[in-house]
Amino acid sequence: MNDSQRELSRLFKAARLVKSVQGSEQLPPHLATRLLAAWRSVGHSDNWPILATIFRRALYGAAAIMLLCLLWSYSDNGTPDSDVALANYEVQNEVQNELLQ
Amino acid sequence: MAACMRRLATRDEDAARMFMERLYPLVLKLVRAHLPRRTSDEDLVQTVFMKIFANLGQYSGQVPIEHWVSRIAVNTCLNELKAEKIRPEWRWSDFSEEEQHLIESLAASASDNDTLPALASRDLLDKLLATLSPQDRLVIQLLHLEERSVSEVRQITGWSEPMIKVRAFRARKKLQKSLRRLDGNQP
Figure 1 (cartoon, rainbow over the protein chains, first blue to last red):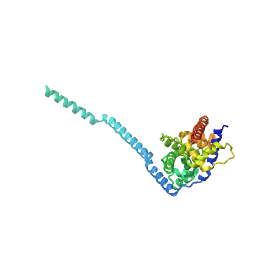
Figure 2 (cartoon, rainbow over the protein chains, first blue to last red):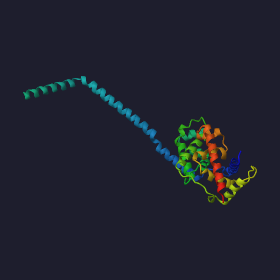
Figure 3 (cartoon, rainbow over the protein chains, first blue to last red):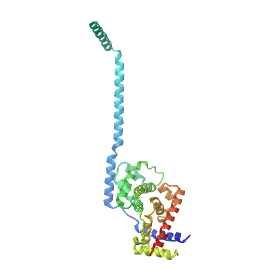
Figure 4 (spheres, one colour):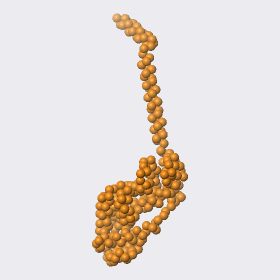
């Protein structure tokens, strides 16, 4: 060990003695209050997981309703009402053609 | 502590208070050891605790909670210290009379048995540590002032053991160089 290494080791050794003086510190009441207030505010802004679940469920619900509407609309094509609508359309076309001629 | 953490998950305020009271000395010690200039230790302690609470769900329980908290505290301090671009360059006149005397006695007496004044030694060392990078400062603090093992430093910092040894060696060299320079600059 050279001189400068020895000097540094002695400095470390002496500085370590201060450690015990700074020893046991307790949480001061004002800081505890401040930390708890910050913790509570973190809790309030931490509602995103609940909101995300609600949004996800709303999305699934909307998708299900859309799907039901589509199914209903497809199943509705074969009813007599659509036949009547088609007949009406054909009649209107014929009338328009006659008028043009 | 496990029961306290379970209660903490249910937003129990008493558990939060107990958790903070238990870990406050550890966090404060780390924060004070790596406190950036112009930053209050209470502000940094609050930042550390908020990070701990925000990430408590990620704590696996495989390591002691103290290690996990230490790593968060150290990383928070290092991030704050990164903002400190300017490091002081001390001159002989920047030291108090006691510190100047200490530097002289360090050079004059090479015997390990001669006791040095603890507070002045700590102040002098703090000034010398301020010239190092945050990582170098941290490794010296943990290895030589808190007398932690390389394995403990690895757990706290997440650095590899060879990296810790190399960093400590280089940091010691820089400190020795600073001491030699001061010793040579004295009037």
